[in-house]
Image (cartoon, rainbow, N blue to C red; front, side, top):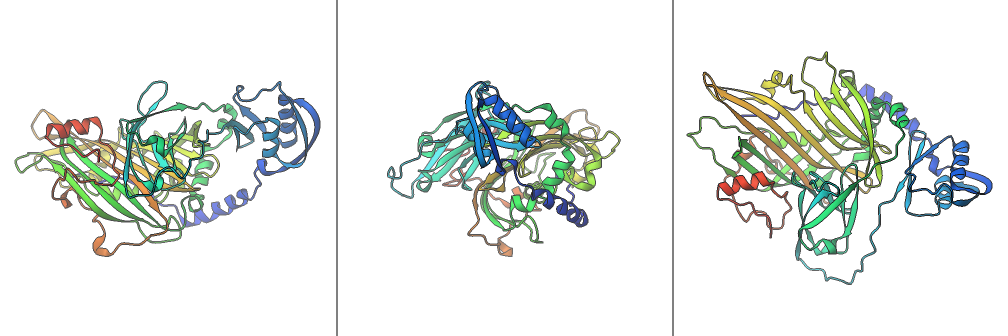
Length: 516
């Protein structure tokens, strides 16, 4: 039996208070773009106008030279006008946006807006529409796994699977809305829901290379940014509870053959991120599984506490080890890039444990919004060379006559920003184990995964669950399910199975329901 094997630490209250005071002072500063200025330089070249603004404000400009015609004539005459409005006027365009990082003003293109949709197209009915497709890189045609697909400004959405494929079921209430596609480091896309109703949409996203001087990256201290993450949690993630609908699945493979595969529709009571002792709760609405192991199998594996671990991987609520102030000295950090995401920028901070630490810690990367310091995405894994020291954290009830140990443990967590508030969007864990029978030469490898995708968010109808409704999140989830229902999903959202999973089910003469 495999347990979750995850380690998380909480931040001491005294440190929270000290740094919170410091951050509150910093937040009182006025954004330079909102500050008013007076210029009376008359007709000048655009490049000269930017130089004049630089001298008056102390802020440098950075931009792709294709975006700004420095030789074009403009007029720099303004009286007590906000800087953002001045920039919009001298550049004579509404297709650019301005953001601030340190002492730099970044000029970058705005996301293209879709034409407004008429409201007289379709009548409101109870019809369910199913939108499917694939999200890829527009240069390589490689699929983009875990890309975010959502109804703009609403909690309805899903993510792509490892093959870049997605499926989203909507009612006619969303017909006149807009569908958004997002991926870190890529220019997002939007399209009217009506245009996406034809299934098998092919969405290609283009990488965006932000013109960022190295000095921005060199002068930023990643530890300072991480401190701001911790003390912006209440403002970013909310102080009120939320009700979520989610899709959960987990599976155990022995080599390439399924041993167990389980999935469920969940309701989640997401407790406030700060100022409460309440815990998250899960209610299982429906579930199913397939299983190939039987009493004659000499070795089988079960995942214990997968539901619990999926909740614990919400690092904004259960602070990640590598974001905790007490563990900062155990890691080395470096800012390696600044990438775009949904009309905003994010720091890419890579981290790994110091060589002199002899217990397994994490190595990975975290993406942090440059303006509000919200966590957008984190991917990390335990140190492979030391993970064997955590055998007891991963393995319980080892099969008699066998020796089993962990080889790797990788995790990925994504958040989605809806109307200025961040919500947990996707969690994935991939674990690899090796086992051999004593006095036998050959070993067996087991791959285990669990995954949670949030498909809907409700802030109005939020209720806690009765005790007898709550899922036993510390148990072996697959043991709580009795059968496999091929017509299981109905109108519920789910993640499209990857190719390897579909092939394994085909070998078992089973097929997961994909289409209505």
